[in-house]
Image 1 (cartoon, rainbow, N blue to C red):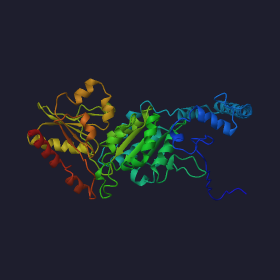
Image 2 (tube, rainbow, N blue to C red; image 1 turned 180 degrees about the horizontal axis):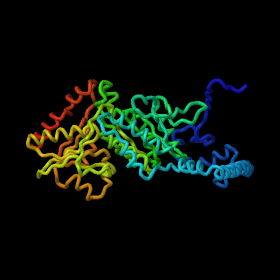
Image 3 (cartoon, helix red, strand yellow; image 1 turned 60 degrees about the vertical axis):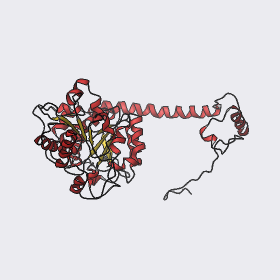
Length: 432
């Protein structure tokens, strides 16, 4: 009697290169061709014809042809039913086509930016607001978290969760398994109808990295949302505080990494991820609250599509340019004011997506980062990536060691990430 109530474990004991007289059960059979002599001997041992080199027996061909014909009849019947349904329900058919094609509104970017929170808040909280707006505009959007939704804030409101026997919802409870979640997202991305997203803490990209890399290798539209993106997550300590992760993730070809600094940049990140069809996008969002950024009068939302833009200009000659991402953008603004009061003029560039910035035309890049100017990168993580934006004599402020377990304010003081500490370091460096 078949077992239907419990899972079954099937153990199959096998031999690698079975039948090869000299290479069966050897390490050579795993990574090297058998060679003509061993291959011929293995075929003889198995009673298989040595010629032609690739043989599909006649009875196997007949079996497959019979099965294909039966399935073709089923397929044609389904197609006739689909055409009949289209004729009866043209509006529903149009919605189905939009869903299957993963279409997004032409004005999606503008609508999400208009819906962006303008007040202070954690970017994970901003992301939750934007996700709600995005889900209403993009029916293909579906996803969830690796058992961390209360922390990542990635539930689609007003929609149930997928569960056994009920598949109408758009929220997935993937369980505590980042790699498994990523594998499912990749599978969803390869089908019609889904723009999938998954979420966890940024440090846990270590578990998801093979799946993230595969989504990039296949250039699939998977959206990765990782929160708790720096040491400033607080008391969870070094095991949960990412240091090298942003640098490592930016090194993956075709993966766009975005670390927004406020509600507007978070909305832009979601819009870019939903419009981008030729690769995955990863958002790194904060646990802690961030102030809403003050932008210049000339600011245009289209700047948010550029990956980096000038947030604070200085009319003084020889001004130093501070390049910051995420939670360090507001820090850079305050440090620039203090440094200027101390005699060092400073510009501030917000660069949530440096990879995207590097794809811009030279005129934009040079307007944001004037050639020959002194530059300082500020990011609460490994500094290795920022060498491509700074020169040998420039300054890179970051954290090239593991974190500590302490409250947010204590960590900022300990690692030198307060406005006063950054300003003092800028002035000392500039005076050389």
